[in-house]
Length: 205
Figure 1 (cartoon, one colour):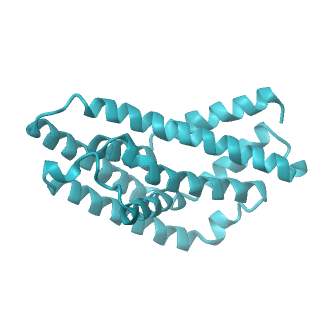
Figure 2 (tube, rainbow, N blue to C red):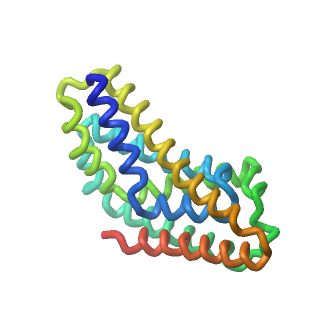
C-alpha cells in the first residue's frame, strides 16, 4: 500500500464512521448526556467489532454474514432492546444523575464496551462493506501480515477519530445548555436519539 492509498483509505474510513447509523446515534446521545469522555468505552467497543469484521474480510470470511444470520438476528434484537432500555433510563433520570462523572467506574465502562460491540456486531453488512471496500486500495490475494497490520492500524485510527469527532461536536453543543430545564430537555433529546438507534437497529434487514 502506497502512502497515497494509505491516506485515501484512512480518510474513507473516517468518513464512513461519520455516516449516520445506530453507532453515531449512540455516541451522540452519550456525549449529549454525559460529555465526550463518557464515549470512550462505547466507541472502543464499536471499533473493536469493526476490526473483527475487517479481519474477517481480509481472510475471505464474508460467508459468515450468511451462514450465521440467525445468530446476528438474535444479537441485533438484544442490542436494540438494550438501547431502548437505556433510552428509557435516560428519559426518566433526574438531571443530576446524568453528569460528566457518570459512567466512570469500571463496571459501567465494561457495560459501555459490550454495548458498543453489540451495536456493531449486530450489523453483519459491515463485513460486506469491507469486502467491497478493501480491493479498491489493495490486492487482497497478496496481502501480507504486515499489510493486514497496517490496514488494522489505519482503520482503528480512522474510526477513533470519527467517534471523537461526533462526541466532541455533541459535547460542545451540550455546553450551551446549563439550566435544569434545558438539561432535562437535552437529556430527553439524547434519549430520543438512543431510542432511534435501537429502533433503527431492530428494523435493519
